[in-house]
Length: 210
Figure 1 (cartoon, rainbow, N blue to C red):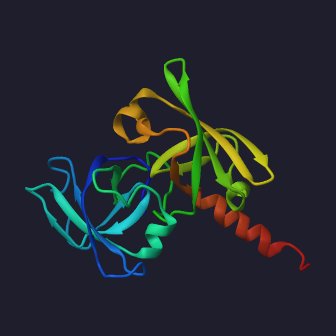
Figure 2 (cartoon, rainbow, N blue to C red):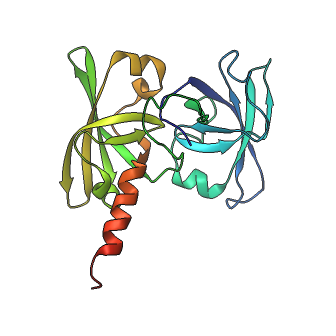
């Protein structure tokens, strides 16, 4: 479980094939900030761009860790397939931690596409088109996770092929995450609000058959 509050920005230092075919996954080596891994153990969970991954090897003094990612996970996520790319990092929530963002599972629900990213006063407006199957979970002033970052939805517009939502990003968020590098056309990992997902399921279960 995570909160969507990014605790560091890492870099994909190397990618190694786990097999010879497209059905095999990859092993990623991640360069982390100095001191970031001091409280990390083998098997711990760290979210990369909002996708929960398991630490399979690490060197705390050397500030790097490794993880294995399946071909399916690579297909369903964005930003985890190129060496040199920066990634948002968040270590798993501990029971005594503050819940500064919102409840985040680290499971990517779908891929969005940036349609607009431009300054608005001292902040920036980020506009993303989400797949139609996620539209029911998006609400004005509701929560959404974009590349692992907990954000508040400022507006939602439903269309035939999906839903377009906008977010206001303050300078601090741009400085502490990779969101400041986004451009129109970029794909982003989306995770909808966990509570909204359960509410939708309960309403569907209570609806009359047919």
